[in-house]
Structure formats: C-alpha cells, structure tokens
Length: 603
Image (cartoon, rainbow, N blue to C red; front, side):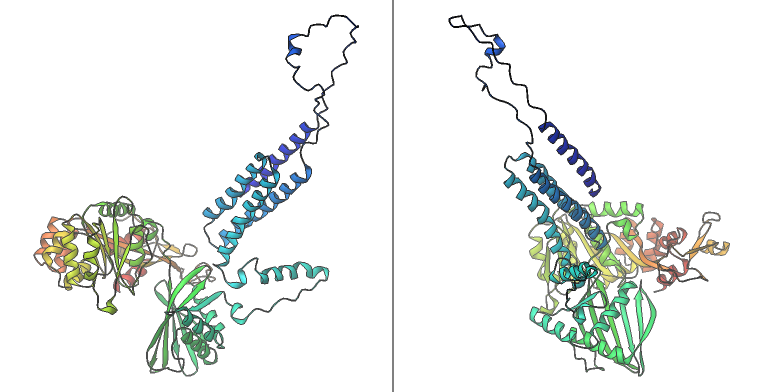
C-alpha cells in the first residue's frame, strides 16, 4: 500500500504543472473596434450570433493567468511529503514490533487520502488545509500513543527523553552538546519489564517500587530475558552452598543453562520474592506468588514458587503467555480430514463433545481455537468458568463465574444460564457428578455441550468423567465424541537430518515397505550450533490428536460397563486411530522424530 505514495507524488506533480500551464495561456484577443457609423445612417442589424452575446460584459478578458497559488501548493506539498515519510515509518514500525499493520496501514493511509482529495474540492483553502493537517497528524499521534503503550520505556518515541536524545545525536557532529538525562537502572539492561500483580493498584506500586530498589532486580530481568529468548516456559533454580543450578523448560523438556553464583542469585531471588509479596528471608517454608512480565510486546502471567530442600532451596518460575496465537485447526497440527469431522461435531444441534489432554499439553489453546472457529453468530453461546481459573475471552460467548473459595459449584450458575435458552454451553473443567448429570439433561432440550477434562487418552477421559460418579447411562446416551491430544516437539527445519529406517522398524510401525523412504532426527554430529534452535534439534511443538466418535456399538459397551481395553477395541473396530497411530503419521512426514514420539507416549 505504501508503495503507491511515489506514484501519487508523480500524478500530483503532473496535475499541478498541467494546471499551471493552462492558467498561463495567452489572453484571448480583444474584438476589433467597429467602424464609425455616419450620423443619421440606419443602424446595421446585428448577426444572430452576436445578438446572443449582447448581455455579456464587453470588457471581459481571461487575464494573464497564475490562478493557482504557489504558496498554498507548497504548503500542501510539504504536508504530503511528511505524510509519505511517516506513513512508511508506521508500516515498518508495525511489522518490526509485530503489531497489527493490516489495521494501522489503512487508517494512516485512508484518512489522509480522503482529506487530500477534499482539499482540492473545497473552495475555501483555510478550511481544507487544516483538515489535511489534522488527517495527517491525528492517525500518526494515535498510533504513537498506542505503540508506546506496548513497548519498554527506552523504545518509546516522541517523548521528552526521545526528543532530547534525538537532538543530542543530530547536533553533536556540529559541536552542539545537549545534556541527556541518565536512564534509571531498571529502564536499562535486559528488555524485560517486571511488575507486581496484587489485588489493588496501591499494593502493586508498593511491591514494584520496593523490588526495583533491591540490587538484584536487574539480574532478575536478565534471567527472565535469557529464558524467554530461548523460548522457555519455566525456570528452575536449585540453590546450593556455592552456586545455583539453572534449568529452562523449553518445549516441554528441561535443559541446563549456565549456573549462577550465590552473590548474584541471592539478591535476584530477593527482588522476585518482594515483587510477589513474599518474605525474602524465608528460605525453608513453601511460598508462592504471582507477578507480570513483558518481553518483546508479549505479556506473561508469571508465578514463583519456592521451597526449602535438603541441598538448599528450589525455586520454580512459570512463564505463561497470556495470548493464544494459533489461528486455526491446521496451526494446532490437526489433519484436514479430522478438521472436517470436528467441524461437523461442533455444528450439531445437540450432543456432548468432550475435550481432553494431560496438564500442560495445549488443552487451553485447542479449546480456544475450536470455539473461535464455531458459528457464534447464528447460535447463542454461554460459558462457565471458575473465578480463579479464567480463560482468554472469545467474542460472543458471555461468561458466568462461580467461586470455589465461596464454596460454590457450577450448579450455582448453570440453572440461571439455562433460563436464557442457549444453543451451546461451554463448561470448562468438569468437577462433579451433579454438573455432568445436569448437562446431560439439558442435551435433551436440544443443546450442545462442550466441556474439558484432564486425561492421557480419549478412553481415559471417559473413565475420568465416570470416576466423578456421574450417571453412566445418561453419559453414555448423550456423549457424541472425545478429542484428546498430546504435544510433541517439532524437528528443527534448519538442522534435521534424514536417515533410512530399518525394515524391522517399519514392520513394527505397520508401515508398508517402500511407503516411507526416510525418517528424520536431530543432527547426530553437528559441525556447529544451529542458530535457529540453539543446538537443541527441535523448535516448537505441535499436537497429536485422537478423535473418538461414539457410535451405537461403543455406546452399548459403555452402558454395559465394559473395561477400558474392551472400549478401545470397540472404538478401533469402528476406525478409531489412537495417539500412537496418529503420531506415526507425523514421524513419516518428518515433522517429529520417532524417539520424541515414544518419549511423549510414555509420559
């Protein structure tokens, strides 16, 4: 879009020059003087064409030209050039900061172009020109205010500090020195912002300011910066007598990092505990508290837990990205055929769809994406969540809350929700049998129920619901499908290497000979560390899904109380593919490695 600006510049130039040329055409020749008429002679009859012009002023001439004001054109030209420069900056800045440039580019471009056309149509320059300036500045200032709220202090623009630094940099070569204010200690160093997360804003300020005054605050920022740079989702600190072991949880696997000395690690921990509202002096009793971190435009909901152990103290720091960034089913790792099956299940008018996964295996993300991709406009959705276990908001799904701290259960909110006659009810985390039974009863009223539970497989998810002592008969009659998943690490595309699988391995995996020519794995003897994955061999994770669609045979076996092994055989007879079978497809495609799949399935 912004590449149109030079073309507009050329068109405007040609238009202005053409208008100026037309304005300077030579004036029309004055009519020749009429011959004098002798006194008393009859007046000559005017031709018909001339008679039509008798009403026009006899002395009208076009004039010498110069009808366009060069000063006004120059003013508009300057504003236009400034707009071209800053609009290109907005586009580049948006993309570098990973902001929504598809939203900001049309705003900055469209507002000005509308005013630019209008300024040539309005007959009053002193009305059109201010509108042009406003159309240039208003979107630009709005973007600057927005982007400044998303970056650290040192990356903000058009602040007093930024202007002072800019002037100092530009004027220094000509010998003009402008003193600049020294940055505060917590504004320099690692690009991580740490804030407290308390119940009140006042308490947040007290904790944050107190933590900043501790010597180890910047070391804590550096620790989190290093971890997030390596894509870690958790940090483990093991305090010993002389040093502190450091490990990062990257894509679900712990990796050792460079150890810290106690002189650095002790103030670091004191700063983090202060930020969380904990006692920095307590090194034995278990303590836990939350805080917030911001790194590269991404906000993380963090939690610190410390506990005394035999060797000293162990500290775990969880780093949870607040925003789910998967766009669709395919981004999660779901096969196209399974996507169609899941969409059909979500489009049903009634039924019970159960989603499951072990803890920390992407259930939150999958649930969010499935809800995002359902029709929430022609159907009425409602959701239910526990007060302390909230999930990312999904448009057009109003949420009701219950609080276990107040001894409430889903039954306190569900009857009120059902009075609104919803078409789809989303209940996160099934907690008791009464909730399951009530949800099953509502399916008879023509409602679709979507719920989640933590389990290792689809069959185990069913057993988990029944373990709540819900009515087996009701649940078996209304259950329509179970979608279960695990997360596996993806091989790094930059350094993975191919190898030929042995015939014995292919036979064990039930892959026909000749179907797959090569498997992939991390490099066995790398010549240098891969920059893309940091030498790990894996980068990112994807989900392995198994979808169990309940048919009449499975429903009868479930109602009769069949064992999990029997239920699995009945499901497989109907075409069910378990996690292992689905995972082998990823191995054959080179998405992951066979050892990684085996590691995940053994968990």
